[in-house]
Image (cartoon, rainbow, N blue to C red; front, side, top):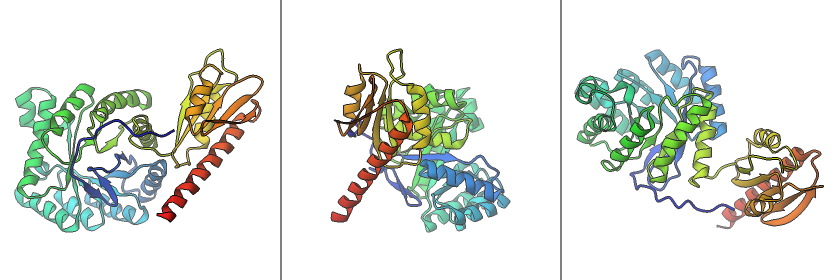
Length: 370
C-alpha cells in the first residue's frame, strides 16, 4: 500500500501562509491562481472555492489596482483558504491588502520604487506576520540584467532573485519564499538548482506559461519532477492554459507519483490491450470523475486481465483483476469478491467508498486514542 518517498528534501526555513506551513518538514503545498476578474467578487469567490475543494492549499489572486484591493477584501471574508495577493509596482496596493487580511504578498521589493516605499511594505508585513513571495520570471527581468546577459539564462534569473533577497536581508525580513520561473524547462531547473544553494528560504516551483492542458502538464511534470527528485521545492503551481482546477489536479498527481503527498484516490490502471476482459479506459474515465470528492488516501488498481492484474491488485488497498467469466476484487491484498462486467463502475465505486470510510474511521480512532 502506501510507502514513504525515498526523496531527501532540502532543508529550508519554514514560513506560514495563513494556517499552511511552507518549508521545513511541512508537506509540499499545492497552489493555483484565479483567472476571474478580481473585481467580480462572486465569480472569484466561486472559483477560489472550487480550487479549495479540488485540493488547493493556497490560492493566488491578482490585485492590479486599488479598486481590486477593495474587492480582494470582500473575497477574503468569504473564503477560508489562504490567499496570496499578486501585486506589481504600486506599494499602496500591498499596504491595503495587508490590512484586509492577505496571507502572503507576491511582490518584488525592487519593483515598487524608493527605499521608503519598500520599507513601508516590509514593516507592514512584519507587523502583521505576513510573508512575502519574491517572484522572478524570465519574461520580465530587469533591463540592466537583460542587457548584461543578452537573453534570459539561469544565472540571470538567480541574479535578479538575489537582488530582491538582498533588499529583504538588509531590512532584516527573513520570512519569504522565492520562485525563479521560466517557460523553458532547462532554464527553470538550472535556476532553481543554483538558487537552492544560495538561500535557506522555501522555494515555490513552477514552469511558467507551460502551455495547454496536455502539453503544459508534460512540461511541468518534467521540470518540477526533476527538481522534486532532487529534494528541491516547498510549494508548487502547475501553470496551465486551462481551468485552474486542472492545475490543482495535476499538482496532486505529480506529488502522489513521487510519494510526497497522499490525498484522494491514487489509481493504478493498465493502458489496456486485447487481453482486457472489460473496457478499462471507459471504466477509468467514469471512475475518476465519480470519486473526485474522496480525500482519504487510497491506492486502487484497475487492471484488465489476469497477466498483471493479481500482482497489482494485491499491492493496492483495493484492486480489480480482470478475468473471465468474472473479475476478482482484492481488498488489502486478499481475494475478496467477484463480479461481472454488468454495473462494473457502480460496484467499484461502492467498494472504493466503503474502503475510504473504513480508513477514515480507523484514522479517527487512532487520533481519539492518542
